[in-house]
Amino acid sequence: MKTIFTLFSFLIFSSISGFAQIVFSSDWKSEADVKVFVTEWKSEADLIVYSTEWKSEAGQNNGIWFFTEWKSEAKKKIYFTEWKSEADVIVFFTDWKSEAGWKNKSRQHYFY
Image 1 (cartoon, rainbow, N blue to C red):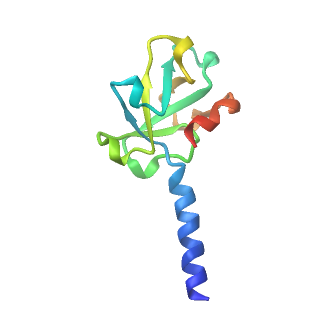
Image 2 (image 1 turned 180 degrees about the vertical axis):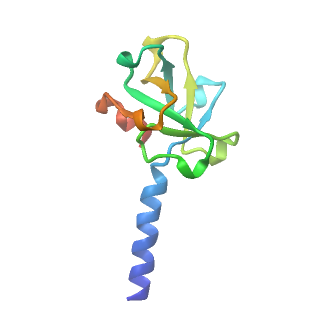
């Protein structure tokens, strides 16, 4: 019974941490998992992102991102493109954590 509980706890923890939005900003498009364009207009965004200074606050695909300096620590490597047409996901950065989240859920799969 204890083994089943331990296994169950591990699976839950793994699934939660697997979706954490710890991101690494790559200088190279070819190594990125997702190409991102930053818009000036919230209404254009697929995802509204709040950038946190604390890794423990990183969300589970809910727009709360922690930028890491280490590629190996990231759950997703992103490349910021200059052209909206090249992007997989269009983001708008907000100063308010409560605004973070998906506006276009059809793009959400890029961060799983």
